[in-house]
Amino acid sequence: MLFANTNQARRDGITLNSLLFLYTFVGLMLMLSASEGNMYMVIKQCIHAALAIVVLLLVQRMSCEHLQKVAMLLYISTIILLILVLLFGHTGKGAQRWLDLRYIRFEPSEIMKVVLPLTLASCVQNQELPLSPLALLQNLLLIIIPFVLVAKQPDLGTATIIFSIGLFTLIMAGLPFKLIRYGITAFVALSPVSWTLLHDYQKQRIITLLLPKQDVSGSGYHITQSKIAIGSGGFFGKGWFRGTQSHLQFLPEHNTDFIFALLAEEFGFFGCCLLFILFLWILVKCFSYSMQAQSHFTRLACAGIAFAFGICTFINVAMVTGLIPVVGIPLPLVSYGGTTMLVTLFGFGIINACRAHTRLFDS
Image 1 (cartoon, rainbow, N blue to C red):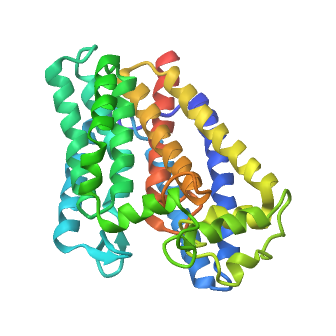
Image 2 (image 1 turned 90 degrees about the vertical axis):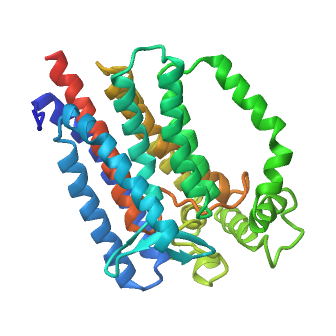
């Protein structure tokens, strides 16, 4: 059965979708301020949002059986796209991340954030738990391949996120704790070697995190201006369209990676808390769906995709506030960009489809 429809599933879907629509609307409000009168950018982002919502509503009507069948096909297709990026990709901001098809440009690495947990969930569904050493090796290979391809762009930040999404999905599948302990020990032991493998700009970002005032007008400019914008917002902010750091061109990338700083400046601590409440509400609902799932596929798919949304949001906010090095990670459903918007709501469509499957099973 391709489509799974029940009245109860629709009601559950509307509840999560209403939160997502509200979250997206907040992003469009911020984009209207960040565009600084560039209505072409605002209209384009509205089109991105409209298309993404259509994708969400279509995907949530698909059956889990169909999603499970196409998961590996989506994975292989995305791997091919990542290889094409390395061969013919468009270079921007020092990395070769985009595929330019003349009328459309997108990042295949963003697609992998949703496709990977979906594929792992599909594989684990057909394997016995706990995972055998061979099954574990096969699943780890599915994680390592996209990690290496994305890291070679180079985009270590996104590659690390993809790896963490895959690892979290395997942990939810019952990855032995001793393997996790061995992995952490090996990571710490190999840290000095990893440092030598980093590009110069990646090393500089880590140094800037530790010594932010060493080069305020150079490598530390982005994070310095971001902290000024966040601090100047106070509790209630300066007001919509009244952010000085962004509108006077002090805050760089204020419509993409650093849009959270614009939120903090214009709506203050209070506005940030409201966004966090909405964000946590979405995560709680998604993980509750995962806990109520009737199969390994629905449980892991819901948890993995929800984790992808959560980790991307956390890293963006941590980056903007100076808790981690600056990496090119957008704020999902808020930052400007069509790929992230479409992929994120595509992922939530899968979660809704899994929830509908659970309700159908119960009934």
